[in-house]
Image (cartoon, rainbow, N blue to C red; front, side):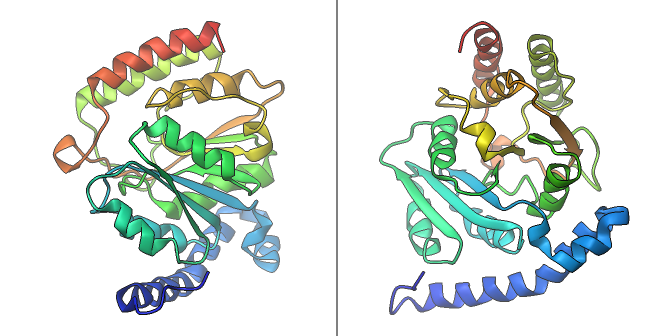
Length: 280
């Protein structure tokens, strides 16, 4: 996509991002090869597109301090075929930043005139994704795009339909969560498992990768954070669905750093688990 004339800062940023992408392509592919075990040689011969194409959906609400860095990290992965940024009525300057970023290759920007909630932003992104697999990526730097190869491998090696990135199946590193956050996540995951028959360790994870053809077969309604239990409940009901978990790296932040989910969202999630267990 052609850049806007006269925007020197944006042109420089695009060059920096492209340079980062070239520098990171080798290590990212090598990571995927090493993770592939006996099939690593075949993956290297065929290149990163041996893995499915990937749409990365990023809901954005007031993330001006992190969105540039996040997009740079996502674009550094050659596995990210398209990046769909959904501005959910931001008021902190994020919208102006997204207006610059949408000129980058592989990036699309969609906008909600007013804030509707994370679930609404995710649903908007899902509706316009075009790749084999669709992945949700928060804009706050808590989740690491370097984990994309781990999330995609089960789709080719185990014919997965869905892959969750678990914060509790330890990766190389994870920030120790506050006890209330840990207990809250564990309780919600346990109750979700009771209603779905699954044995997930992290239902509330952002990193949910789903085959696009599976997504197209379910109808999502949630506007806010209840998208997590709703999506899990409806994926669990897909006949013959194969759901996997992989460990991911995680750098949690706190409310003072901009974290938006709170105890009211936990109560809403409890209600959503019950609701979506019995109704569509």
